[in-house]
Length: 112
Image (cartoon, rainbow, N blue to C red; front, side):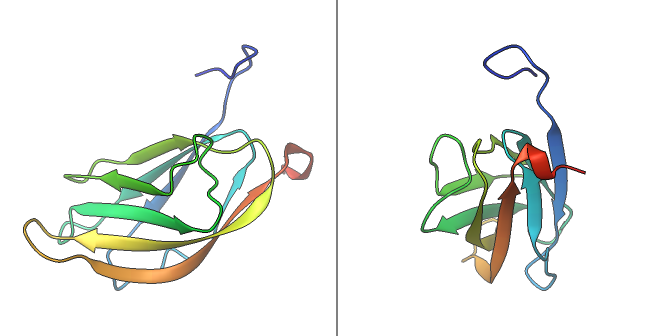
């Protein structure tokens, strides 16, 4: 995958557990792509919901994965701290919500 000027884009992977586990804080590089994976077999569906500003480059505040698929989205090019909750769901049941959690985007100058 490349960005708008043809440079490679980093894909950062993070794993989300079930509603009784905490993913803790997520930190990614500005301009990267984030892929969230679900490792819960009990709750095969999950959604991430951002409150206030969102780090998703396209401005989406809710992103959803079904059947243990991942959520993948381009991250904003600017740094910041964002707040999110996770909604875990079994098919045909009401979701269980966990959070709020912190999500930070750091500029490439701060990249390790």
